[in-house]
Length: 180
Image 1 (cartoon, rainbow, N blue to C red):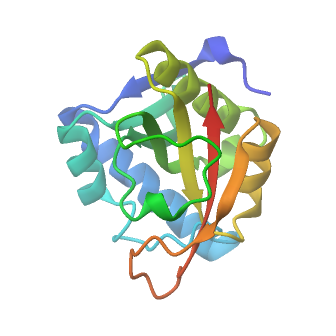
Image 2 (cartoon, helix red, strand yellow; image 1 turned 45 degrees about the horizontal axis):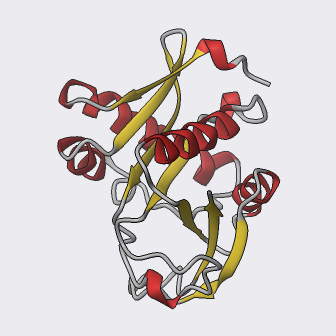
Image 3 (cartoon, rainbow, N blue to C red; image 1 turned 135 degrees about the vertical axis):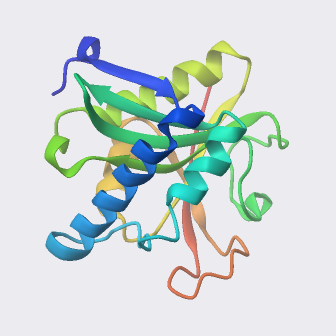
C-alpha cells in the first residue's frame, strides 16, 4: 500500500493541464497496448487534455503525485453527465446534495499500492467536510477493478442504467453510492 503521507492530491491549475492531459493519454495508450481498457476510454477523446482543461477551469480536476511523479487523476463535481435520476439510489437526494467521481485513473506502475483507495477516501472526506450527503459514481459495468475498489470501500450498488450519454461502446453504466 502507498503511504498516504507520500501522496499529494492537488487541484489541477491551468499550468498543470498539459501534465495531467499527458498522464491520461499515457495511461490510455498503456491500457490499449498492454492491459485491458476497462473504462473504455478513447485516446484523445476522453479523458483528454480538452476534458482536463474544461474541468480545471471550473476547479474540479485533481491529480495526485508521489514525489515528482503523477500517480493518479480524477474529477470531483456535481455534474452527473446524464440521467442520474434513473438510478435505484438508496438515498433520495437532489442534485447538489452529492458529489460524483469521474475519470478516476491510477498510473499502471502504481497499481495495487493504495492510490485508488487514497483518492476515494479524499473524495469522501472532502464531500463530508463541505456538507454533501453522499458520493456517487458511475462505472462501465465490466470495469471489475474499479467495482471491486468501490465495493471494498463501502459503496452500494444502485443499478445498471442508461444515463442517456449516447455512447455506442457503453450503453449502460453501473451506479454506486456512498451515503453519509
